[in-house]
Structures are given as C-alpha cells and as structure tokens.
Image (cartoon, rainbow, N blue to C red):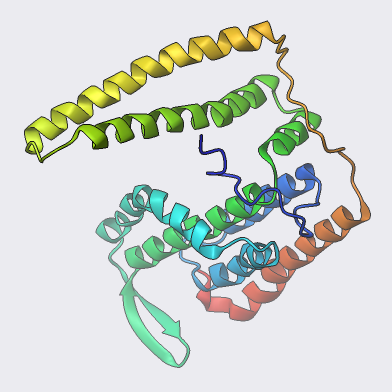
Length: 262
C-alpha cells in the first residue's frame, strides 16, 4: 500500500517539522486568507506572498518537484475557471513590467491572478501537510474544539484513501497482465467502465469490513497522537515571524507598489 503518497516527508526533523500542529494550521489559514483577500488583479503582490511557503519548503528540505507535480495534477480544474475571465472582462488596462508598459485585457489579469493565488495557497497547503503528520494534525484540530464529526470524516477519508489507491493499483496491474493488444476505443471504454464499477462495488465491501474492524477494536471517535501538544518558544518565534511577514506585505509592500494592486 502506498502510504507515503501524501505525507511522504512529514517525518522530518527540521524546524518546521517540530512545530505544534495547531500553530502551523492557524498560520496556514491566516496566510491563505491574506492571499485570497488581495486584489482581484493584484499580480505583483503574489510573488511577495510566494516567498513564505517557498522558503518553508526549502528550509524543510521538501523537493519542489514533488510539490509542483501534485499542483499540476489539480491545476486543470482551476484553469477552466481562470480562462473564463477574458470572456467577460475585455477592457484594456495598462500593465507595467519594469520600464515596459503595455496594454492587456482586464480578464487576462484576473486569469493570471486566479492561477497565482491557486499556486501560492497550494504551496502553503503542501508546506503544512509535508511538515505535519496527519495524525498530529487531527489531534491538533481536536484540541482546537473543531466539530468531532468533521475530524472523524477527515480521518476516515485519509485512511480509506490508501485502501482505495491500493485497489486501483491491483486492478490496473491485473489489467496490464491480461492485455495483449489494443481492442479499440469502444471496447477499451467498456472495459474501463467495468473496472470502475468493480472498484465501486469492492469499495463498498471494503468499507463494511473496515467498519466492523473498527467496532471490534472499540473505536470511540478519537484519534490519538504520540506527540505532546504544547506551545514552545519555537512556536512563539514562528508565530511572530508570520505576523511580521504578513504585516510587511500588507502595510509595507502594498502601499509602496501603489498602482500595481487594483
């Protein structure tokens, strides 16, 4: 089973790996809120925001190729939304890139801004996930008094995802060992549909077995972590650094750049 697909680098020992999960979660939420609340056509400021998660990934020794491959995997869904901007906002606006000034439709500025915000927030999310074990994150959310139903759903989604992926790999491996030639588009589509149906049926059966196993082991809706939850001096330094970084961008960089933020 491919357990390291999401939190492959979460067991490191860097400065960010040792932070309290609650501190990292709140910092990621606050940082993402500042990014999303920037102007709808603010492009230059996104490069300033990107410095934060980029520095965390580098400092925590997380390969950037690992992060950007997964961002590209979900990028097409956001790309469809972003490309709708040029169709309803065609008013030309002046864009300055250093000493060069050229005219560009406002819709294209919105498109670039949406893609930029998506990239920065996804980098922030991966900086959180790649430096925090999911069990520690769930324990931190439980300490923060989040709804227990939400925590259980997230925990089950995370654990069952590996079981589903394992089933998919088994089906694809069995298909590849029996495939001797190309059967044509129509026949291949029918086989793919049959494989998907088989996967859904097996998923229902497996979920029932998992439910019975959890009941047999006395699962009471609480996830436990081996790490102690306490705010240390390192966490306080991290919180202060995040506040200073966001403050510099919000009240230092934005007013200085002026018209670049619409």
